[in-house]
Image (cartoon, rainbow, N blue to C red):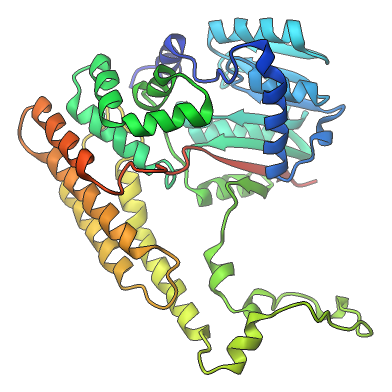
Length: 406
């Protein structure tokens, strides 16, 4: 691929994805919505009072303005010249605290290590030439005791969008084709995005399909990057649900707790209900079955990772798919999924239909026929499907808050 930063920003110069409100009258509601977002991350808005914040890849500056209004002195870094100008104009008019806005590639920006209370990186890292290095730079900029608020594409939540990218790159000759075909094939999805995020259809199409670089992260990958840079995962949105915590018996979950902290003189509260009491009481104790279920879920992960990785980071320079390997992995995933017993942690019927519909699309793309014929066949499949690209297409971006150890 050519210079990734230049190619990505060429797309954004045509349709900017970081436009969240279009008139000043919408600013108050935008600020309130972002306060609610912070509470989802378990960060009180008051934490930003008299703080320093680095917004790494600020776009139009609209999101950064939230933190200015919460009391932070903001430093904003943005490569795109027009976005830099827009952010400067926005802050000149509305900022309440000290600020600096710098027109620079984030990889060229010079900063003193451990110099900011907060670092903000929202929807940036997965579009850069070095996604992991981008996050590492964010970590390095944090003071001990500081927090990184990171928004990145998640490879599980982004799977359906990555599959959409594979489709349009397989049937298109140029960007004009991608725009045209995506608006036809993914009409329902795009309409939901408009209603949810407030962006225009062209901003969404350019950001999701024309964008030449989208590297989606796995949650374990984020946690590992945090750990290597002395950060702990503080919170996330969407909430992470640890399958082991859910499936392990309570005695295993809490075996590390120090019993000495319990006041021996205190009486147990009668309003607590412990499922382990019912398990021990009845003949349907599911301890062994829970352990077996966790083992079965672990066996799914190699196939899950193969499936999601094969359609990750799709672009015109990289959209070839090993179809036989993909179908082999997705069928193995399906076979193991359908054998899972005891607790329906996963909706097996839904997933069975969902996987079958994916296979139909992949087989259509693999046929040795003209691109326009592939388009019509895929269109027919998507018109008749019941699961794929219906309702919610996964979470496009996950948010992680990392706390730097003191």
